[in-house]
Length: 236
Image (cartoon, rainbow, N blue to C red; front, side):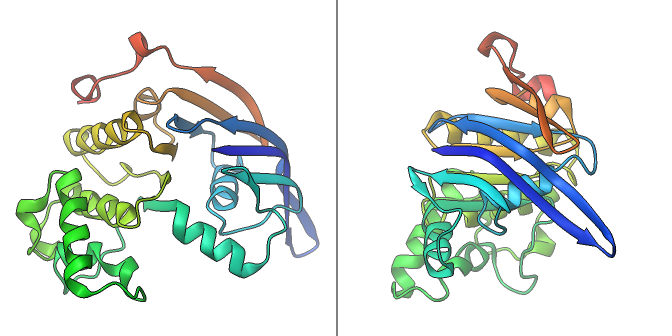
């Protein structure tokens, strides 16, 4: 699914050049659930932005489903991002005045698909996150965990092969976090690739594999044995 080789990214802050990534190399298989951990400033967000095609490396290559997108033009990058990637963030980014169903349908806004077909797809996505019974509720009527489920359903609406989740449980209590992690675990078990950035080791323990970033470099790449992975009840 993902092949990253020698990824480097530098930013200039006034006269200072900050090396956010320093030759990062790794691969992720289809259907793998990978957690990325690291201190603030370690390069996690920069790496996730490159994986999500929101940023480009200064050097190195990034292949997604076998296609090198490091030097692709903007149209190719945009098409690949919309077709292949779903995003889940710590902040839910829901429109407050429209229903959960309409929020899930937002990525279809410029689609040529008719409204009934789009609504049916959104309903199926809400079923996947076990929230179809709240489809007509607006965000203020939903708990934090329910709002994050809506955000995950929205990320699923275009049937992406890759889900990128940036601190998706950061604003949630333990019980709600466990429910979100259970959904991500099921999505991975069903064949979707999940890459999750977190600072919480209990959250990372639900993944198949843990990458640790330090000062722009991968310092650990560990497989988490299935017998050691935390279940939802463990996280609670």
